[in-house]
Length: 326
Ligand SMILES: Cc1cc2nc3c(=O)[nH]c(=O)nc-3n(C[C@H](O)[C@H](O)[C@H](O)COP(=O)(O)O)c2cc1C
Image (tube, rainbow, N blue to C red; front, top):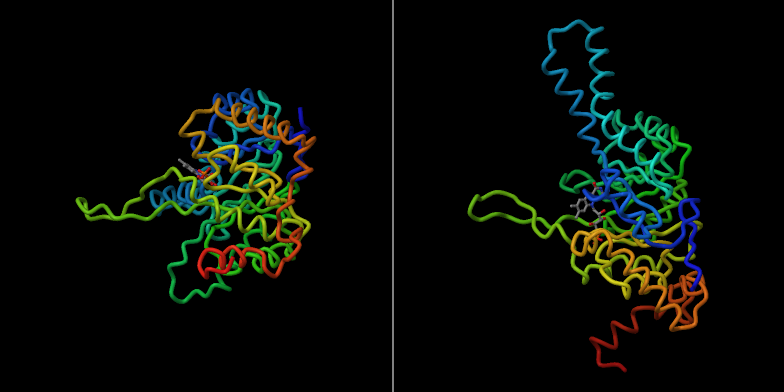
């Protein structure tokens, strides 16, 4: 059997398949099943900035006339109360599993949540993923200002954290290569590409805003495939591919493009936790069929950096399809 071992976020992984953050990763029972099915690591369900902060805000509203000392107490208690269940679950998970567990925070701004990174770290988690989700709906905010939010959040967390930090980015960036370069200059060493924007929809009967298709489709994987191929080997950083990876073929494509690991979510919602063992078997089978000894032998083989003609990389494909040039 081929060697699937992979280094990611300074962690030694037995293979490149990681379970991404979702409702499937918020409890010991299912994480244990993922471990048994062969997952190399799991990213915990995110705790949301708003969940932490609103716990405090609610208490403040209820206690508007209280003494300042009481406010201080509630401030502390509110935070701790809300996080306790999350932290306790991680402690349980860490005690009962042996694969790396990566914590996750969903945030859109720097807030008091940043202080809790130390508490998360104290649970023994092996890394932290920052799922930064900024909705660009303010006409006064430029792209540069929005990009700066990502850098500021990372810097704030880096100040207190000593575990490896990954940044999960949105798919709609005009020049991902430039943005990643800026983030790498700021010290980001791990990128998760991409976080999926949940499709925006409108319910015409209720006449209200809704979401649709929470589960991704396989056609979405070209977003991450392209960016991973462009970035692989260009910076000293680890790359995790995510969104639309629904089968072994997509996993292999991302490895060829240069991903260190792939993150899986929708495919596991659709096919169940055990499906990860099938994907691993198929990956092993493909490597054997092609007499490839190790995943590192194919990683990045088709990246932009390893292309014999980088200037024409991808543009040639575009011309072939749309210009009639063969
Ligand atoms: C039901 C559901 C819940 C999710 N919750 C989170 C979350 O808490 N934090 C996060 O970073 N991503 C979350 N995601 C996004 C996934 O981690 C993943 O990035 C996204 O679904 C794209 O990957 P996929 O195409 O394999 O599903 C969630 C996805 C789903 C479907």
